[in-house]
Image (cartoon, rainbow, N blue to C red; front, side, top):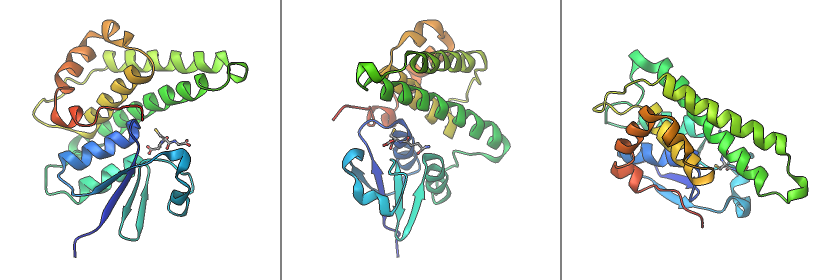
Length: 199
Ligand SMILES: N[C@@H](CCC(=O)N[C@@H](CS)C(=O)NCC(=O)O)C(=O)O
């Protein structure tokens, strides 16, 4: 019997976008449910962190975007997004992209708080980390094989796009190698069909 797979996702989560793209690229059939996390009390029985993405596979719950991507990749008949010879490089670059997403998200959560509750130093710390991380990606750019898609490329593209969505696109003029690569990568169907939006 085929597994019933449900992906709880949001309209603009960069972590969720990674998992959705993985399902598209690896041709995994799943039902995606776009939810409002603030109203998702039902999720607590599966994931006490009440975060998206969360994946249900029959009675199994898989939590955290990295674990979800690894699972989806593992049941796919397509070429793996985690080739063995590059495995540790790929998961480390993916973690850097995840950290960039986190900083953009943390900054965003802070600036939407009432002005008298905001911490300028916290916002500044996130902005410094965002800029430093993107510069690091530029300086350590991998010159990816355009014909072999790996998990870190997906994660980096989602992180950069989320940076533009919630912060700004200054990184493009400061990081030309990344900019050129992103221009090519963002045209892919799986990027175009998963553009973040505010609901
Ligand atoms: N490490 C987690 C992070 C997931 C995460 O932070 N998701 C955010 C949305 S982008 C969330 O659900 N936030 C809800 C909240 O904090 O209340 C992953 O990779 O899946």
